Length: 147
Image (tube, rainbow, N blue to C red; front, side, top):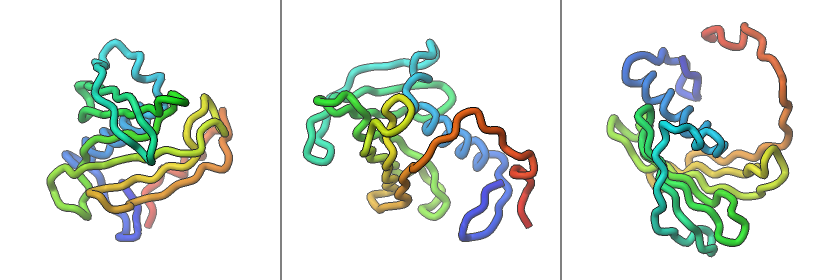
C-alpha cells in the first residue's frame, strides 16, 4: 500500500513492481549496492550540474530501469542521479526522474543530506535529512494499512 495526500491505495501488479524499482533506485544511491556483480557499470559523458563539471556512470540491472549517476569532478560525490519511473500523477508512461544532491558529508559515507527530486522537469519532493539513527527497529504496526 501507499499513502499520500490522495489517500491510501493498494499496490499490486505493475504498480507494486514500479514502486519496488523506485526503492531499488533509492538503494542504489547508497553506491555500495553497485558492487553487486549483477550490476553492469559503464562510463558515460559528464554534464554540468549546478555549475559544476561531472563524470558520468551508467548502471544497468535486470531488476530496475537503467540509472545514470553524475559525480562532481572536484569532490567525487553524487551531484545527480536520473532514471525514468511511472508516477501516477503524470500518467501511465515512464517520465524522467532526477535527484539533485547537495550538502554531502554530514552523514554516513558522505551521502547527501539535501536532495531535490524533479519529476518530468518539475520539483516533486525536496528533502533534508537532519538525523540518522542506525540499528533502529521499526514497530511492526507501522506496516499496517492505514484507515
